[in-house]
Amino acid sequence: MRVHVIDSNHLGRTNVIGVAALEGEDGSIALIDPGPAVVFEEVRRGLEHAGLDPGRVNRVLATHVHLDHSGGAWCWAEAVRAHIFAHERGVAHLLDPERLVVSATRIYGDDMNRLWGPVKPIDSRQVTPLGDGSEVAIGDFTVQALDTPGHAQHHLAYWIPEERLVFTGDVGGVAIAGGPAIPPCPPPDINLERWKKSLERLRALLPARMFVTHFGEVRDPAIRLEEAERRLEAWALWIREGLRNGFTEEQLVPGFEQLVTDDLRSAGVKPELLAIYEQADPAAMSVAGLARYWRKFHPEAIT
View 1 (tube, rainbow, N blue to C red):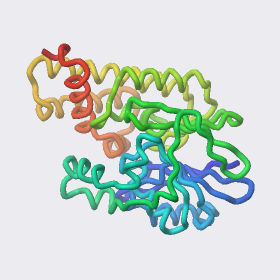
View 2 (cartoon, one colour; view 1 turned 30 degrees about the vertical axis):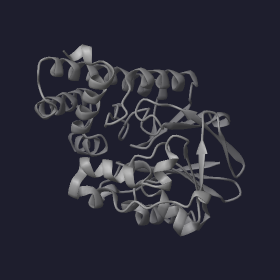
View 3 (cartoon, rainbow, N blue to C red; view 1 turned 90 degrees about the vertical axis):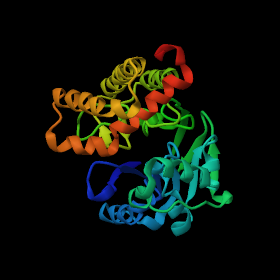
């Protein structure tokens, strides 16, 4: 089994959305997080550049159904008749994406098509729901699905025990070009308690290798997972204090953006990578997601 990371060049920028292509000894290919529809052709070209035949893609595994991760799953279902796998709590959005699109449009407005492209329903015969511990056979190896909520209630990580290899989607954080891990916290599902348990579960696996959708293979998985949790806690407390002091989400965004930028700079992130971190994990989205978390689960903490 070989793993290739295909750069989708989202909006013309590298290192934002990576598609993992798992190549079996029989030549079959599975994709983990195919990205949005707007990058479909770029991913096809990336596979070809890596010496892989896009027509051999017969499995697509989504860590969750957010548009940057699996908004383009339908493209593979249509183009090569690939079978799509996703969390049992998320497959409904693949079969009928209307609610997902309406929700995303409230956030992105007129930018929806530019950012993500169209989202179409997938034939139910090509979709399989996965629960915790479900296994997917891909050529000569098996991938195990792990229920890892916190970023989204329908989030899965994918684990290959023989390789000690885990694909963490967003729950393991965003880590660009060897940089530190930061937690993407968009609305509506952020749950700190569940996220911390998911991170604990991932650490307990003692993975030798870890792949994140944003972006690629990261060094020192244990360190990156600890970084993601530490920043998750720090960000949440910063937002809590802002809300407690009467600031609106809009008022909190500039200060939070500066907090994240200063943190990344102090961690050694080069200036040219800051924009990539922001595209992969927009600060304003995390303000909205963490504010919603406090209002939904701990309103007493912000009054």
